[in-house]
Image (cartoon, rainbow, N blue to C red; front, side):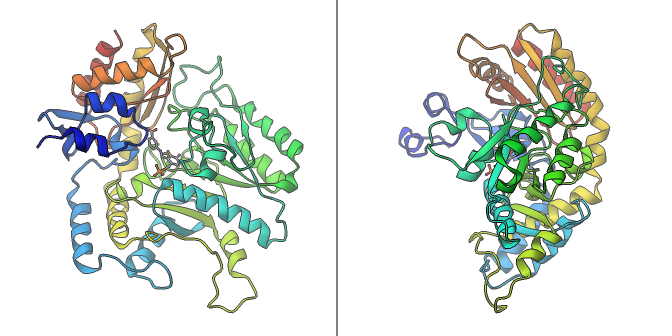
Amino acid sequence: MTITSAQLDAHWMPFTGNRQFKKDPRIMVAAEGRYYIDSNGRKIFDGLSGLWTCGLGHKVTRINEAIKEQVDTLDFSPSFQFGHFKSFQLAELITSFTPKGLNRVFFTASGSDAVETALKIARAYWAHKGLPSKSKFIGRTKGYHGVNFGGLSVGGIEANRKIFGDLLPANHLKETITSENTFSKGQPLDGGSLAEELDGIILSQGPENIAAVVLEPLSGSAGVIPPPKGYLERIKSICDKHEILLIFDEIICGLGRLGRASGSEAFGVVPDIMTIAKQLTNGVIPMGAAIVKSEIHDVFMDVNTPNYMLEFPHGYTYSAHPVACAAGIASLSMLREEDYFKRVRDIAPYFESLIHELKDFSVVKDIRNFGLAGGITLEHYPSEPARRPFEVAMKMWEKGYYVRYAGDTIQIAPAFSVQETELDELFESLRDSLS
Ligand code: PXG
């Protein structure tokens, strides 16, 4: 099969240099296990598990069978006012992966929707508690929380925000990469005290005006930035002191990438609200969720209105889509039954040792890793930070590797079943591409 120029013109691609892509398209036609096949019949190693989605690999029989059975049984069910069994099964299953206390699941259609849902729950929670002025948010520089207006507001990647005009009121903590903690393996020892800045921001804005702090426990899209030791613990205690909710955006961190069920578990800090997506269905069908503590949920239910009235005027046509639920149940069941979190923890030290061997290249300015996630910051060409990662990723593509290039970083996040020999070859190719 080929692609025509009219077809290329018709599709405006997301987060893509469309002009470059359409001159030299990179088209996937099939996928199995840890590999894609491209339109030239080449086998391509999937170095980012799709888009951090497919930790279980591609063409997973159990997930595909569940989907086929679901479309043949109940292909769609109205998400409002009527239910189907699988959403309740999946919700209960999700709560067996989340920290104790986070046990009410609101389904969404994507990660961005999950973030918007979490922000709306936070504001509405305070309004129900008689504190409607608690409406501002605090995010972090380099944070990524999707592309809708709320997520953009708390997000801290300037390039994603600047052309879209007024956003929600939000302040941003500093990023946690410092000159002292570059090339850290896992959680940096330096930088935990950066969390103290939160206290000052809260006092300057007034705690009575702040709904929530929103963070990725480990920043993913910004290039894999693990939290310094002690950082998240301090953030949590400052939030508690000022009665501000803590939202962990676990869309990349959750469900195995860090070798645990969540970033919360990996780093030992429990938020009030958590968002997940991506690995929830192994990326096969779009789905996200916001999971909240029952105390938060109960405030919504504890209202003096007739019980047929809505408690939370929010939801998506595709919330808890039955086909996504079927994929989610299969995906989560496999993660648990086949002990993939342990598999990630077992291979992570090998991944860590290989990625840090790239330190000797003069263009490599920092390397960060945790679990099966790695980020490499490359030296900028003058005023062109994104060019070198693009060039390196294109060399990798020529060699049969898909790795992600974003901002001034290369990101690597292979499937949970990745073999040591595959990592050897991937990093060997990366060494060649950096030379
Ligand atoms: N929050 C986080 C932490 C994410 O990583 C979203 C929200 C938004 O999810 P949706 O499903 O609306 O895209 C994400 C998505 C990358 C990359 O390579 C990361 C994402 C999306 C695309 C690329 O880093 N993360």
